[in-house]
Length: 33
Image (cartoon, rainbow, N blue to C red):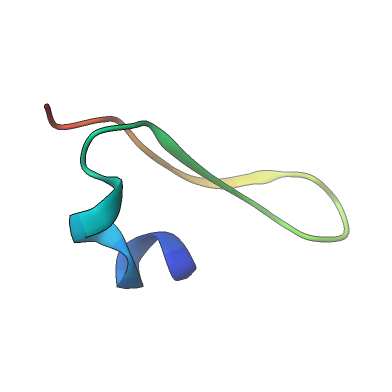
């Protein structure tokens, strides 16, 4: 979950985590600011 590890750096933009093979959206983290 790179999005969670890099969370402080990603707070200004939306982050979508997709499964590498299926392309399924695993997590969506909206921008906080």
